[in-house]
Image (tube, rainbow, N blue to C red; front, side, top):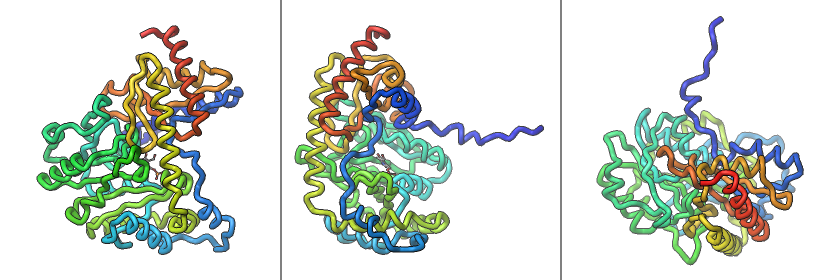
Length: 404
Ligand SMILES: Cc1ncc(COP(=O)(O)O)c(C=O)c1O
């Protein structure tokens, strides 16, 4: 009988380093172990009440499709959001609503790249970029950044050395997941000078826009967009900003009419994003203006707790993240993935353990990140302190079992 094979490209899709250890966490929980989840950026901060009220008072029946570009109330709310950020040139027709920022990433790659085109990306990068690139037959070309300078960009001539005739775009995540780096005006200027010189797209993933610390200013691609209307693409999401991870809402924003018309054709093919999600999120215009101030303070305090706590553990190396709610930490272990799994299968301290994301999956260059983990500080300060204690105890025991 003829065998039925799945595609070669399916086999190329990497598993998510953020989620692949989940079965071990579930097994630990079934044995009565509490697992503190630092592996995934699913915030514990509450979703704004004004959004939840939309669900409590839901009347629309039946729950229909929405418009393919987006539900009008939600588009209007987002237009207002971008205007309040100071970008009043943006109009609703520059915004495509997507099913999470995830869909926006995929749409952007598909829409600007022919098969086998290349996109420059700074590693470590958000691991799922690789999955979306493989799905869209795009090659990510990694340019390595390092902890010793806070994972900031290398000099222009190094970025330049990765350009080929197939390079189509530079993909940037700002503030960065997984490093927490916030790129400076000088770095953004460099990116756009390359884009100008070599006619490239710039894709900026800004799903953590608000989360910048120590009084830093976030430099958005929206500041460059009017000058580079055909080349700039903003990827955005409501998941982190309003603790709406389960609502699955994002946006792709561009002034390029060809891009937006094509993206809308794809959007029509997938009908629409969720109506309930969009109507709930359209209440963002009514969210209290102090909402972000309190949240940014909370994340910054957690950042301080985790940075100072982990810094005191012998053999641990990290740099102070400038934004988002992640950090990359080098551990005194050979194989961080083995350590992360061991934490779930073989270790607990006072019936509690921690779940971390091994960092190798955030790099494309082989062997990089093998002794690093990504940590998301999305749990409360007391639990975060507990997690630091557990990591320090676990490292003591692990090093006895598996010496360096
Ligand atoms: C940098 C970055 N971009 C995009 C996403 C996708 O988020 P969502 O699909 O929930 O909007 C995430 C999620 O963690 C992320 O960290």
